[in-house]
Image (cartoon, rainbow, N blue to C red; front, top):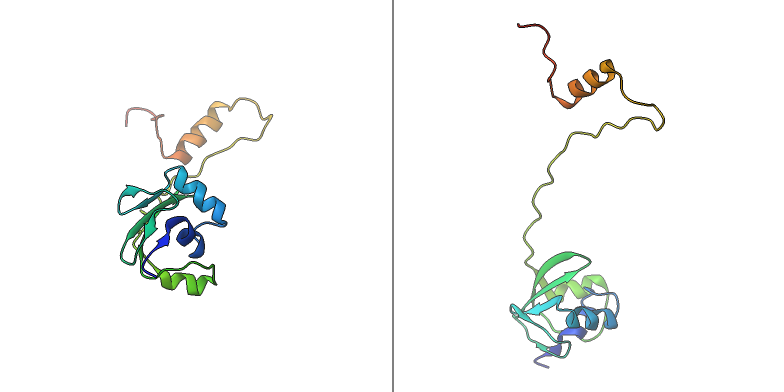
Length: 128
């Protein structure tokens, strides 16, 4: 066996939960083989690069084995090499300050405390 249908391979290596989901992803243009949009029946060979955009996550795989039957996750992982670059580190944002519902408008003192907490010191006292 030198090639396998791309939808069958995507399903067999557990990138899609069902074969019909793999076929639908191919039809929608979410699967690319060697940077070309892939139809469900397009053959995949060892060494091809498959890009998938499933569940709003883009991943890149190099085909190292041809699978036509769905197997365990450990066995499925032997059929591809993950080339996806690591995600950029998350940027920490300051915690959002929430007021209790029904607490009314903040007083001038409350506003100053909130600005101090947020790191904004718009209110300067005197001309120091």
